[in-house]
Amino acid sequence: MELRKINRQDAAAQWAYTTALPENENGLTNPFHGVSFAEYEKTVLPKLISYEHPVDMPDWFVPESYYYLWDEDELVGEFRIRHHLTDALRSGAGHIGYSIGKAFRGKGYDRKGLALTLRIAKETVPENEIYLRVNKDNIASQKVMLHNGAYIAGEDEGHLFLRVKKTDIE
Ligand SMILES: CC(C)(COP(=O)(O)OP(=O)(O)OC[C@H]1O[C@@H](n2cnc3c(N)ncnc32)[C@H](O)[C@@H]1OP(=O)(O)O)[C@@H](O)C(=O)NCCC(=O)NCCS
Image: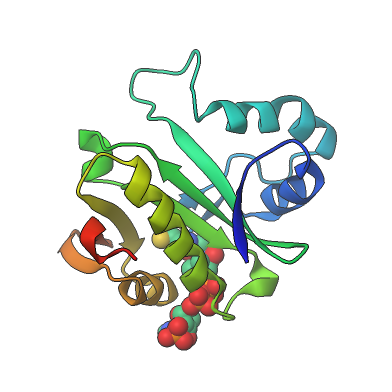
């Protein structure tokens, strides 16, 4: 299993994943649900690749890297890392967002994918802890975070805020 950064060679598989991902599932948003392959190749893919080194983006936009989790030749999930915190991210979505394709859920992919993503975040983000947020009713995602060493740092009405200390990441 490996995490591969978003790229042009894997366009077909990345598009199939992106177009099928719901617009909003448990707070993970995807404005590209239903996009055609032609549109994905022409505008969406270049835009998502550019997020790592944003150009012409608003001041609040933090660089973000997209990765896909591959099991052999199957793309099973997506993991996004925001490179540093802002006040909005600190009290909001945090550093990492992820999803696993519907056909591949319940097989441990997220657990493994988050572990690999945390290893990258440990080397790339400046903060000492990796911040995560999850809806209170998203038990599967909470379990995955806790399995990966996260502790509950706070909550609001609908969310839990979890953090993983860099020293706890293998
Ligand atoms: C959340 C999500 C990423 C989990 O992916 P996954 O690959 O199915 O997760 P895993 O198989 O690695 O682990 C799921 C764990 O939750 C448990 N689980 C799943 N559904 C559950 C439920 N309804 N109640 C309790 N536990 C549940 C599983 O038993 C497993 O626990 P275990 O490792 O102790 O056996 C996936 O459901 C998803 O993409 N959801 C939509 C987007 C989303 O919610 N993203 C996260 C936002 S914070």
